[in-house]
Structures are given as structure tokens and as C-alpha cells.
Length: 492
Ligand code: ADP
Image (cartoon, rainbow, N blue to C red; front, side):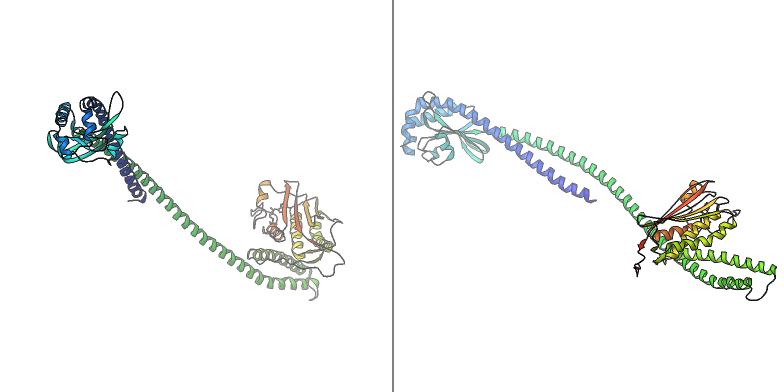
């Protein structure tokens, strides 16, 4: 059995049993009180009737008998006459015995003669009668000595009623009436038993209905609990799988970066030899080379340079992904840095007959604490892209100083970038034209490097572009300005 049903069964059973006991016994008590009340009223009425006869005919006897002995009382004529009268008066009624007490509590009359002469002075019923009240109680007797002789198994309502004069209101004694309520009580008890059975049936039905409702509710709850437990289990499993997949992905990324890093390093060594030696050959230091061979070696050198740039990019990206990117800030003459970049890229701009405008605002402090290598690479990547994707017009680089931040703008009058591509051009290996027929070279790593470097320097990069009109990249990075006279800059 589920706990809810068990708890319900126990508590509701207790509640129902208690309710039944309270209602049933309350009902019985009430019924008995009604019987006593009714019989008491009838006894009072009867006493009024008897009082007239008794006080008229035997008033004097009652007054004097209180000082007489039992034998004297029973020997008197009045006593026998009173006994006869009372027997006649009560004939056909429920009254089966009468006792009369004098004001001092002496029993001066009882249909059970043995009791004459007994004192009832301390009896509470007698005392109530003495002050004009009526006291009644219901009792059961195995055997009872009545007018008619002994009666077995009998229920009686005993009432102490003041023996009061109807005219003067004076109390002359107390009369005790014994009222046989056996039949009435058994009738009432039958009715109470019937009502009790009806009540019990009602409670049992109610209990059964509630029990089934609770059981049904319990069943639904249990189904829901199982479902929830199942879902929680599934979620936990999915979560574990996710964690495993995540760990595997991280490990794969780390291995990939490690591999790329090692490979790049291994590739750079022979490549540097190729570039270096081809440089020596084209410079003529190693001896004369004919023009045709010179052209070929020059192409080897250019291709080597290009390959080195690609490898450097891959190396940078793999370093970033492996979490090995560290920003090293040093005192940098930003004007000098820009001039060197301009010199480097002027050649490319000239090759395409583009105008390269470079403007460093006078607001830019001469010396800044920045990672010069990274800043330089950011500018180079943006400028070389601008030149690469512009066929005619101008490519501009402006450097400004705003709110203690270095503000770099690189704009061109080139092909522009479609709005939908702006979302992904900063992702690794993503290009607007990723097809094999594209005319421009590149790996799709330049902008990814720009973004990673910028973010590593707590900066932001943004882009605005209009198709076929041009593009502007903006990079803002925090930089600490250094006074020219400041001797040792703080390195972070
Ligand atoms: P790539 O090596 O292809 O240049 P980048 O990461 O530097 O890789 O750039 C990603 C892509 O963004 C480029 O392939 C190009 O489609 C687009 N792009 C970058 N800069 C410009 C620009 N100035 N004008 C037009 N398109 C650009």
C-alpha cells in the first residue's frame, strides 16, 4: 500500500470512529435527558394532583409524624389510609412507588414499609425538594420493590418534588416518585441503535468513497512520480553524456592545437631555410645567376613568404586555442609602429595602384604600454585584407586616442561584405566566398586572429560594410599612456 493511502486509512478511520462515538453517545445522552425531562415534568404535574389530596387529608399527620418512630407512624390510622389512597391514586399510571419525607428528612411514608423511619436529610434530591426545586435521575434496578411487589430488571426515573400547598405555596415535605420508564427506554434505545446503524453505514460509505478517491489520486501521483523519475534519469544520463562529449571535444581541440603547433614549428624551420637561401641567391651574394633562374628563385622566395605567413597564422590560432596566448605589454612608440606597417603594406597597395592613406591623430600619445607585436599584427591583417578586397580607390588607416583607448579604423573602397556574412567572418576558416573559384588567396584566419588578439587585450572589434562600396573595421583597445619622461614603464 502507498503511504498516502495508508495514512489516509489510519487517520480517517480514527476520525470517523471518534466522530461516530461523539455523535452516537451525544445522541444517546440527549435522548436520556429528554426522557428524564419529560418524566420529570409529568411527575411534577402528578405531584400537584397528589399534593392536594395528601395535604388536605393528611397535612396534620405529615406535620406531626416527623417526631414519631417508624412503629408509631405505621400504627397510626392516617398512615394506612394514606397508603390506600396513594395506591388508588397511582393505579393505572407509571408511578410504581412513592415515598414522602417530612421536613426533617424522616421517611414518613414508603410503599416499601421497611424504609419508614429512615432519614434522607443529607440526600441531595431531598435537599433540592426542600428548597422548592425538582431533582430527577435515571437508574436501573435488578429488583425493585414496588406497590405491586418485586419487579425485576427495571429502569426508573426517580423525582424528588416539593410537597407544596397549592394555595399558600408552603412546602410541607418532599415526595419521591418512582416512574417506570423501562418500556420507554427500550423503545428509545431501539431507535438510537437504528440511528447508530444508519450513522455507521453512512460513515462506512463515506469512508469507502474517500478511500477510493485517495487510492485513485495516489495512483495518478505515483504514475506522475515514475514519469518524473524517468525524465530525471534521462536528463542525468544526457548530462553525463554531454559532459563526456564536452571533455572529449576539449581533449580533441587540445590535441589538434598541439599537433598544429608542433607541425607549424617543424614546417617553419625548413621554410626559413628556403626563404633565406633563395634570398641569398637572388641578392647575388652566392654568385651570378641568369635572369630566368633569378625569376624562378624569386617566385620560390615569394611563395615561401606566403607559406610562412599562413603557417604563422595557423600557429597563432593554435596557440590561442591551446590557451597559450599571453599578452606582453611593453613601451611602444605607436607612431613608429604605424610607420613600419605603412612601409610594409605600401608595396602591396602600389601593386594594385591603390592609394594608401595613413593618419595618426596628434592626440595619440607617443608612448603606449601595449603588446606591440599583437597590435601590429591586427593592423597588418586588417590592412592586407582591405588591399586584397579592393580593386580601385583608397585604403585608409586612422589611429586615434579616445578615453584612454587606442581607436584604430581601417577602411577601404572595395567589394564590401554582404550583411548576412558579417556574423561569421570573424570565425576561423570562414570566408564570404569560400568557393574554389575565388580569386583572392587566404585561409580565413586573419579576422579570427584579429578578434582573439583584441579580446585578449580587453578590446572590441566591429565592422560596417556596404556591398560594392567599401568596408570599415574598427578596433578599440585599452592602453596606458606613458609620459616621455617616465623612465621605467610598469609591465603587466
Ligand atoms: P582571409 O584569409 O580569407 O582573408 P580573413 O579571416 O582575414 O580570411 O577574412 C575572412 C573573410 O572576410 C575574407 O575571406 C573576406 O571574404 C571577408 N573580408 C575580410 N576583410 C574584408 C574587406 N576589407 N573587404 C571585403 N571582405 C573582407
